[in-house]
Length: 114
Image 1: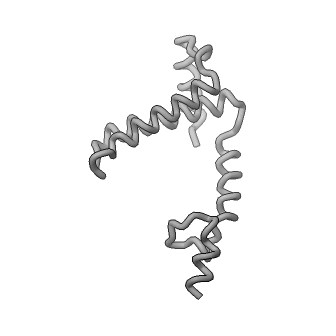
Image 2: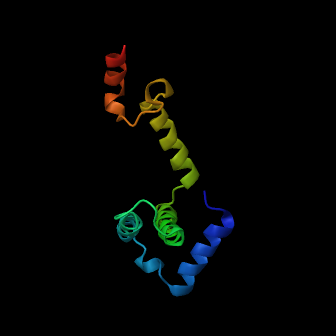
Image 3: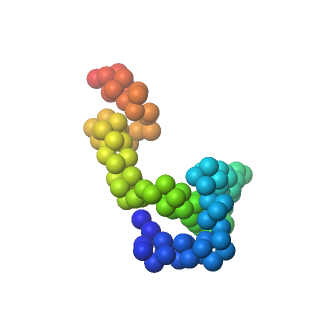
């Protein structure tokens, strides 16, 4: 997750510009979606976009995610680890390894193979 130095730099950047007033959870969630769409757009017509542009758009997505977590008062490490734990339960290794099957269909596919 972001280092304390990264978090401090982002907070200082926003504070210096008095932008916190605009950083409502709603606006930040919208910004995440918009930036994710810009990242996806780089792959629209091919699978090898300019790496620098990908990194810029990815940084925008991550930055807005950090701002939203900060605004909501949640710890990114904590929520990611909790989500990973629940996802591990949905996708047990013995059923999901090497498959891109949705968790609701994993058991069914496993039984069909037997």
